[in-house]
Length: 300
Image (cartoon, rainbow, N blue to C red; front, side):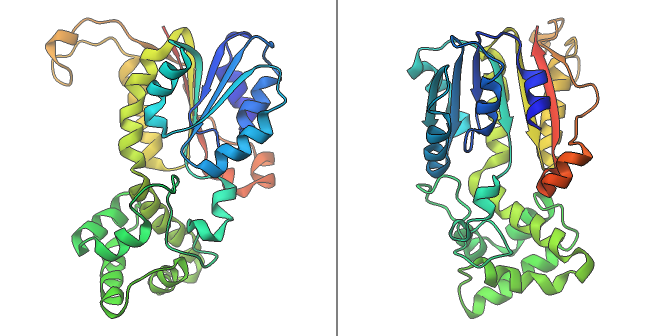
Protein backbone atom coordinates (compact mmCIF):
# COMPACT_ATOMS: atom_id res chain seq x y z
CA UNK A 1 0.00 0.00 0.00
CA UNK A 2 2.81 2.39 -0.89
CA UNK A 3 0.56 4.88 -2.70
CA UNK A 4 -1.82 5.15 0.24
CA UNK A 5 1.13 5.44 2.61
CA UNK A 6 2.55 8.39 0.67
CA UNK A 7 -0.86 10.03 0.46
CA UNK A 8 -1.41 10.00 4.21
CA UNK A 9 2.15 10.30 5.50
CA UNK A 10 3.72 13.16 3.57
CA UNK A 11 2.99 16.67 4.80
CA UNK A 12 6.24 18.52 4.05
CA UNK A 13 8.55 17.94 1.09
CA UNK A 14 11.65 18.84 3.09
CA UNK A 15 10.58 17.00 6.23
CA UNK A 16 12.06 14.25 8.38
CA UNK A 17 10.41 10.86 7.86
CA UNK A 18 10.88 7.78 9.99
CA UNK A 19 10.14 4.19 8.98
CA UNK A 20 10.26 2.11 12.15
CA UNK A 21 9.96 -1.22 10.29
CA UNK A 22 11.87 -0.43 7.13
CA UNK A 23 12.63 -3.98 5.95
CA UNK A 24 14.45 -3.70 2.64
CA UNK A 25 13.62 0.01 2.37
CA UNK A 26 10.83 -0.25 -0.20
CA UNK A 27 8.56 2.33 1.42
CA UNK A 28 11.39 4.84 1.95
CA UNK A 29 12.53 4.48 -1.65
CA UNK A 30 9.01 5.17 -2.91
CA UNK A 31 8.57 8.17 -0.57
CA UNK A 32 11.88 9.61 -1.74
CA UNK A 33 10.36 10.36 -5.15
CA UNK A 34 7.94 12.86 -3.59
CA UNK A 35 10.48 14.64 -1.37
CA UNK A 36 13.03 17.37 -1.96
CA UNK A 37 16.78 16.60 -1.67
CA UNK A 38 16.99 18.38 1.69
CA UNK A 39 14.52 15.95 3.29
CA UNK A 40 15.76 13.32 5.73
CA UNK A 41 14.80 9.63 5.72
CA UNK A 42 15.43 7.31 8.67
CA UNK A 43 14.91 3.56 8.57
CA UNK A 44 14.92 1.27 11.59
CA UNK A 45 14.69 -2.52 11.62
CA UNK A 46 15.79 -5.16 14.10
CA UNK A 47 16.59 -7.66 11.33
CA UNK A 48 20.24 -7.14 10.34
CA UNK A 49 19.68 -8.88 7.00
CA UNK A 50 16.89 -6.41 6.20
CA UNK A 51 19.14 -3.52 7.22
CA UNK A 52 21.87 -4.67 4.85
CA UNK A 53 19.34 -4.92 2.01
CA UNK A 54 17.91 -1.47 2.84
CA UNK A 55 21.33 0.18 2.84
CA UNK A 56 21.99 -1.20 -0.63
CA UNK A 57 18.52 -0.30 -1.89
CA UNK A 58 18.62 3.29 -0.60
CA UNK A 59 22.25 4.23 -1.18
CA UNK A 60 21.72 6.39 -4.30
CA UNK A 61 18.77 8.48 -3.10
CA UNK A 62 19.23 12.28 -3.07
CA UNK A 63 18.03 12.73 0.52
CA UNK A 64 20.03 12.26 3.70
CA UNK A 65 19.55 8.59 4.64
CA UNK A 66 20.14 6.88 7.97
CA UNK A 67 19.47 3.15 8.31
CA UNK A 68 19.85 1.73 11.81
CA UNK A 69 19.66 -1.79 13.25
CA UNK A 70 17.36 -1.46 16.27
CA UNK A 71 14.04 -2.57 17.73
CA UNK A 72 11.32 -0.10 16.82
CA UNK A 73 10.53 0.45 20.50
CA UNK A 74 14.03 1.96 20.82
CA UNK A 75 13.50 4.57 18.08
CA UNK A 76 13.74 7.37 20.68
CA UNK A 77 17.38 6.47 21.36
CA UNK A 78 18.09 6.30 17.62
CA UNK A 79 16.70 9.82 17.08
CA UNK A 80 18.77 11.14 19.97
CA UNK A 81 21.93 9.62 18.50
CA UNK A 82 21.13 11.28 15.16
CA UNK A 83 20.47 14.62 16.85
CA UNK A 84 16.84 14.71 15.72
CA UNK A 85 14.16 16.01 18.09
CA UNK A 86 11.02 15.73 15.96
CA UNK A 87 9.80 13.98 12.83
CA UNK A 88 7.21 15.05 10.28
CA UNK A 89 6.02 11.55 9.62
CA UNK A 90 6.35 8.06 11.08
CA UNK A 91 5.46 4.77 9.40
CA UNK A 92 5.01 1.30 10.85
CA UNK A 93 4.38 -1.60 8.46
CA UNK A 94 3.88 -4.42 10.95
CA UNK A 95 4.26 -8.16 10.52
CA UNK A 96 6.99 -9.91 8.56
CA UNK A 97 8.38 -9.43 5.08
CA UNK A 98 8.07 -11.80 2.12
CA UNK A 99 11.83 -12.30 2.33
CA UNK A 100 11.56 -13.54 5.91
CA UNK A 101 8.65 -15.84 5.05
CA UNK A 102 10.44 -17.25 2.01
CA UNK A 103 13.76 -17.92 3.78
CA UNK A 104 13.50 -21.40 5.36
CA UNK A 105 16.37 -21.02 7.83
CA UNK A 106 14.57 -18.10 9.50
CA UNK A 107 11.82 -20.50 10.59
CA UNK A 108 8.79 -18.26 10.03
CA UNK A 109 6.80 -20.42 7.62
CA UNK A 110 5.04 -23.77 7.91
CA UNK A 111 5.31 -24.33 4.14
CA UNK A 112 9.05 -25.14 4.15
CA UNK A 113 11.13 -27.02 6.69
CA UNK A 114 13.68 -25.13 8.71
CA UNK A 115 14.84 -24.51 12.27
CA UNK A 116 12.09 -23.36 14.62
CA UNK A 117 13.58 -19.89 15.07
CA UNK A 118 11.29 -16.91 14.19
CA UNK A 119 13.57 -14.25 15.69
CA UNK A 120 13.46 -10.98 13.79
CA UNK A 121 16.60 -10.00 15.65
CA UNK A 122 18.77 -13.10 15.41
CA UNK A 123 20.86 -11.92 18.35
CA UNK A 124 17.84 -12.44 20.60
CA UNK A 125 18.04 -15.28 23.07
CA UNK A 126 14.51 -16.71 22.83
CA UNK A 127 13.54 -18.79 19.80
CA UNK A 128 10.28 -20.39 18.74
CA UNK A 129 11.75 -23.78 19.73
CA UNK A 130 12.30 -22.48 23.26
CA UNK A 131 8.64 -21.46 23.52
CA UNK A 132 7.23 -24.64 21.99
CA UNK A 133 9.37 -26.90 24.19
CA UNK A 134 9.26 -25.01 27.50
CA UNK A 135 5.90 -23.25 27.85
CA UNK A 136 3.34 -25.02 30.00
CA UNK A 137 0.12 -26.40 28.53
CA UNK A 138 -1.82 -23.41 29.95
CA UNK A 139 0.62 -20.88 28.51
CA UNK A 140 0.58 -22.52 25.08
CA UNK A 141 -3.22 -22.66 25.11
CA UNK A 142 -3.40 -18.95 25.97
CA UNK A 143 -0.84 -18.16 23.28
CA UNK A 144 -2.66 -20.05 20.52
CA UNK A 145 -6.10 -18.76 21.51
CA UNK A 146 -5.07 -15.13 22.08
CA UNK A 147 -2.42 -14.34 19.47
CA UNK A 148 -3.54 -17.06 17.08
CA UNK A 149 -7.27 -16.45 17.64
CA UNK A 150 -7.65 -20.16 17.01
CA UNK A 151 -10.68 -22.05 18.45
CA UNK A 152 -8.59 -25.25 18.47
CA UNK A 153 -5.96 -23.59 20.69
CA UNK A 154 -6.48 -25.96 23.62
CA UNK A 155 -6.20 -29.06 21.44
CA UNK A 156 -3.13 -27.63 19.73
CA UNK A 157 -1.43 -27.00 23.07
CA UNK A 158 -2.20 -30.55 24.19
CA UNK A 159 -0.83 -32.03 20.95
CA UNK A 160 2.40 -30.05 21.32
CA UNK A 161 2.85 -31.14 24.93
CA UNK A 162 2.28 -34.79 24.01
CA UNK A 163 4.71 -34.66 21.09
CA UNK A 164 7.54 -33.00 23.00
CA UNK A 165 7.41 -35.68 25.69
CA UNK A 166 8.72 -38.09 23.04
CA UNK A 167 11.35 -35.77 21.56
CA UNK A 168 12.17 -32.06 21.39
CA UNK A 169 10.40 -30.18 18.59
CA UNK A 170 13.15 -28.45 16.60
CA UNK A 171 11.82 -27.64 13.11
CA UNK A 172 8.92 -25.89 11.41
CA UNK A 173 8.14 -29.13 9.61
CA UNK A 174 7.77 -31.02 12.89
CA UNK A 175 5.46 -28.38 14.35
CA UNK A 176 3.34 -28.22 11.20
CA UNK A 177 3.04 -32.03 11.15
CA UNK A 178 1.87 -32.03 14.79
CA UNK A 179 -0.75 -29.31 14.25
CA UNK A 180 -2.04 -30.09 10.74
CA UNK A 181 -4.36 -33.00 11.69
CA UNK A 182 -6.35 -30.67 13.95
CA UNK A 183 -7.76 -28.74 11.02
CA UNK A 184 -9.95 -29.74 8.04
CA UNK A 185 -8.21 -29.48 4.67
CA UNK A 186 -10.23 -26.46 3.51
CA UNK A 187 -8.89 -24.27 6.35
CA UNK A 188 -5.66 -26.04 7.26
CA UNK A 189 -3.31 -23.50 5.72
CA UNK A 190 -5.03 -20.48 7.26
CA UNK A 191 -5.13 -22.13 10.68
CA UNK A 192 -1.46 -23.15 10.54
CA UNK A 193 -0.58 -19.60 9.46
CA UNK A 194 -2.35 -18.21 12.52
CA UNK A 195 -0.66 -20.70 14.85
CA UNK A 196 2.80 -19.89 13.50
CA UNK A 197 1.97 -16.20 13.65
CA UNK A 198 1.04 -16.54 17.33
CA UNK A 199 4.43 -18.06 18.15
CA UNK A 200 6.24 -15.38 16.13
CA UNK A 201 4.42 -12.61 18.00
CA UNK A 202 5.45 -14.17 21.30
CA UNK A 203 9.09 -14.67 20.27
CA UNK A 204 9.45 -11.03 19.26
CA UNK A 205 7.20 -9.52 21.96
CA UNK A 206 5.40 -7.63 19.22
CA UNK A 207 2.23 -6.65 21.10
CA UNK A 208 4.12 -5.28 24.09
CA UNK A 209 6.40 -3.25 21.83
CA UNK A 210 3.45 -1.87 19.91
CA UNK A 211 1.68 -0.74 23.08
CA UNK A 212 4.85 0.98 24.30
CA UNK A 213 5.82 2.80 21.13
CA UNK A 214 2.70 4.87 20.37
CA UNK A 215 2.84 7.40 23.24
CA UNK A 216 6.54 8.06 22.60
CA UNK A 217 6.01 8.33 18.86
CA UNK A 218 3.19 10.84 19.30
CA UNK A 219 5.47 13.05 21.40
CA UNK A 220 8.13 13.02 18.67
CA UNK A 221 5.76 14.15 15.91
CA UNK A 222 5.79 17.81 14.92
CA UNK A 223 2.50 19.72 14.94
CA UNK A 224 0.88 18.61 11.71
CA UNK A 225 3.13 15.53 11.62
CA UNK A 226 1.52 12.27 10.64
CA UNK A 227 1.58 8.65 11.71
CA UNK A 228 0.68 5.76 9.39
CA UNK A 229 0.33 2.19 10.63
CA UNK A 230 -0.28 -0.88 8.47
CA UNK A 231 -1.42 -3.90 10.49
CA UNK A 232 -2.02 -7.49 9.36
CA UNK A 233 -3.31 -9.01 12.60
CA UNK A 234 -6.65 -8.11 14.16
CA UNK A 235 -5.09 -7.63 17.60
CA UNK A 236 -2.49 -5.24 16.19
CA UNK A 237 -5.15 -3.29 14.33
CA UNK A 238 -7.26 -3.13 17.49
CA UNK A 239 -4.35 -1.58 19.41
CA UNK A 240 -3.86 1.04 16.69
CA UNK A 241 -7.58 1.81 16.42
CA UNK A 242 -7.96 2.15 20.19
CA UNK A 243 -4.93 4.42 20.57
CA UNK A 244 -6.03 6.72 17.74
CA UNK A 245 -9.56 6.87 19.16
CA UNK A 246 -8.36 7.71 22.68
CA UNK A 247 -5.99 10.43 21.52
CA UNK A 248 -8.49 12.04 19.15
CA UNK A 249 -11.20 12.62 21.77
CA UNK A 250 -11.59 15.39 24.34
CA UNK A 251 -10.42 13.83 27.56
CA UNK A 252 -12.89 14.20 30.40
CA UNK A 253 -11.52 11.34 32.47
CA UNK A 254 -14.31 10.57 34.95
CA UNK A 255 -13.98 6.79 34.45
CA UNK A 256 -11.32 5.63 32.03
CA UNK A 257 -8.74 8.37 32.61
CA UNK A 258 -7.14 9.88 35.72
CA UNK A 259 -8.67 13.13 36.97
CA UNK A 260 -5.51 15.09 36.17
CA UNK A 261 -6.17 14.49 32.46
CA UNK A 262 -9.71 15.86 32.59
CA UNK A 263 -10.43 18.58 30.08
CA UNK A 264 -7.27 18.16 28.02
CA UNK A 265 -7.77 18.72 24.27
CA UNK A 266 -7.33 15.90 21.74
CA UNK A 267 -3.79 15.17 20.59
CA UNK A 268 -4.50 13.49 17.24
CA UNK A 269 -6.88 13.91 14.33
CA UNK A 270 -7.79 10.65 12.60
CA UNK A 271 -7.25 10.90 8.84
CA UNK A 272 -8.72 7.50 7.99
CA UNK A 273 -12.24 7.51 9.37
CA UNK A 274 -12.67 4.27 7.46
CA UNK A 275 -9.79 1.80 7.58
CA UNK A 276 -7.93 1.57 4.26
CA UNK A 277 -7.44 -1.84 2.65
CA UNK A 278 -5.54 -2.96 -0.47
CA UNK A 279 -7.16 -2.71 -3.87
CA UNK A 280 -8.17 -5.83 -5.76
CA UNK A 281 -5.31 -5.14 -8.15
CA UNK A 282 -2.72 -5.08 -5.38
CA UNK A 283 -4.08 -8.30 -3.87
CA UNK A 284 -3.90 -9.94 -7.29
CA UNK A 285 -0.22 -8.99 -7.51
CA UNK A 286 0.54 -9.91 -3.89
CA UNK A 287 -1.92 -12.18 -2.10
CA UNK A 288 -0.12 -11.61 1.21
CA UNK A 289 -1.40 -8.01 1.18
CA UNK A 290 -5.04 -9.09 1.50
CA UNK A 291 -5.17 -8.75 5.29
CA UNK A 292 -3.47 -5.33 5.43
CA UNK A 293 -5.29 -2.49 7.21
CA UNK A 294 -3.94 1.05 7.06
CA UNK A 295 -4.78 3.74 9.60
CA UNK A 296 -3.41 7.27 9.74
CA UNK A 297 -3.55 10.19 12.16
CA UNK A 298 -2.20 13.74 12.33
CA UNK A 299 -0.84 15.46 15.41
CA UNK A 300 -2.74 18.60 16.32
